Image 1 (cartoon, helix red, strand yellow):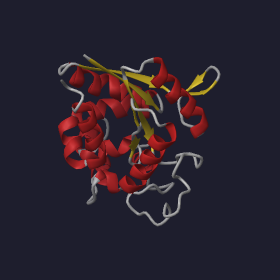
Image 2 (cartoon, one colour; image 1 turned 90 degrees about the vertical axis):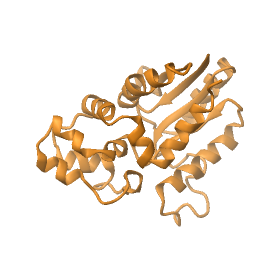
Image 3 (cartoon, one colour; image 1 turned 135 degrees about the vertical axis):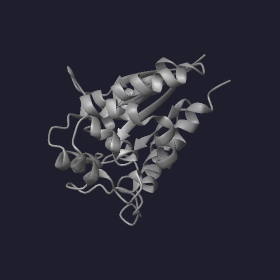
Length: 213
């Protein structure tokens, strides 16, 4: 048995892990537990600073050195105090996966903990839903599906304030409720389809797969 604790950004990611990742990995003897990041005393959800989540990551790693500790934070609107966020060359990077990889590497070096695996979602959870937007048809009409069907790969969607994945969904479907619709649509899409079209996400899952003995 191998245990993995995932520090997640909010309730949507918690539901995604519980509903899709937990049952998948339990079948191969890997047991995942999502933990929502604390933002302030008595409040959970969101990532407001690196210093805040760094303390939580370090505590989790040291409390249970036999478990793998990983993260699922959005690259979109990531606080600027994250390691690598203001590094030379950051602004020259055009690929979201490259930006995420730069920060993940910097986080790993900063914490220096062998049981820590940083992961940033490019650019946010909703990118996974663009893998198969036809599944929005359960909740919206065909006009919405047409608006969400793009000629680019999900992780190539940019992080503009009006064009980030969640912003595109809200523009097409004003009634979209992230914690409700997001995980349900993700479950309909399935992990295999997500792996096929989201290479950065697939690489993270491959690291989890490698824990199987």
